[in-house]
Length: 246
Image (cartoon, rainbow, N blue to C red; front, side, top):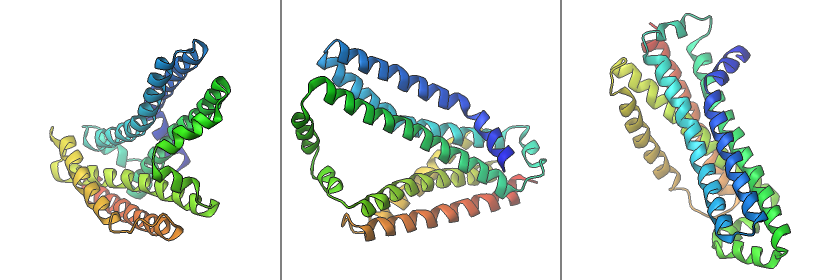
């Protein structure tokens, strides 16, 4: 499994380099805006960093999905299954790589976020103004800030399990598309259509959980997301073994 993971990380290394380069460039612009005391540039670079953090995670996941689609639909795809690894290990390595890459990029932008908050507070010397801005974001932030540490941990686990569910649903959608279409040109578009349909269905299911902002809610959301993840992974690996490895 370790060799498979290293191989998968090498195949998606360019995506991570691109995102880290974007993060570094935007952070440099942000620091320059503080040094020049340009509030317009501060606002612009902050929004760009937030946008890059949100879209960067999507970009990393999409890149890994494209790699999976290419591996299972190219003329050389049979070579993937000539290695002494089962479909479960092959798909598992891809899922783990994608999840870890998303965590890496997410952690990078989170660290930059904390750094930027510290830089802003140090620059403006106005903690009250900053806290006022946070409060103006709405009641959702206030509810999160008022949670105890255990509930916050469950909230984080809920968010992470959601991302894992998205990865597994996307990979299952691509495996299903590849099994049905066998390398046809529209295959990736069908993958995206399958993913959107499944994702909308899962969001509808999760929305049935009452929003109580407590440990019970986040525990239930985590259990549902992990259950869907396991089902999607097993389904994808079984499809891969039955339809793509022969």
